[in-house]
Image 1: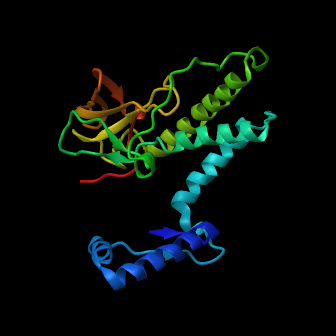
Image 2: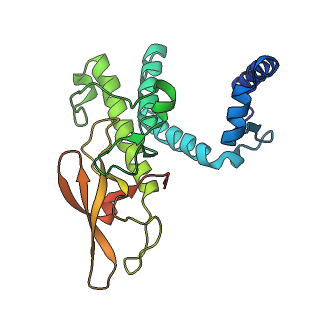
Image 3: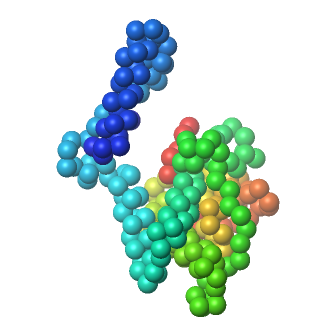
Length: 237
């Protein structure tokens, strides 16, 4: 487990070390479990955030779109915190890897929210405020409009990162084979909702390169080209 040198992480590390020391004197069950799982705690060198490129890229993407969504918004502290909490929920709803690789009818995926609350994030259905002028909305509706705007921008960028753009005459990158769980690109979904499915059949073209697949979702079977299918960022065999 690698983390940067933030004061919060440093303080948590000191408390964890104290707990480990206490448990080492009484019981080594936790230490043995961590050792068997190969878990090791370490810090990045000081002033080297670029070495945490994987998660720093996610932070950069979030800041990029958050600045553009809130550029013209004049919010109080409470309103700003409300938007940030909603953005946090959006970021923690992204699928990481399938929870099951054996059941093709299981469309549940592991998300960052599972590590925080033990389940996927759910949201309350709301109206679409995309094309509604801000002066016609209540204060709550304006905050919802900001959340929906961030979701549209960030989810489109995140799906673009997951997609591997290659020449049509070749098939490179993550293999989209039968049984692979994918995110189906759909711009009409509300915040925190991801359309997941499993590939049940691939269709080759005349040049023997697969560009289209049949995907089984929780509702029906659909046929989509590879440009609308995104493999999850973590593949577990």
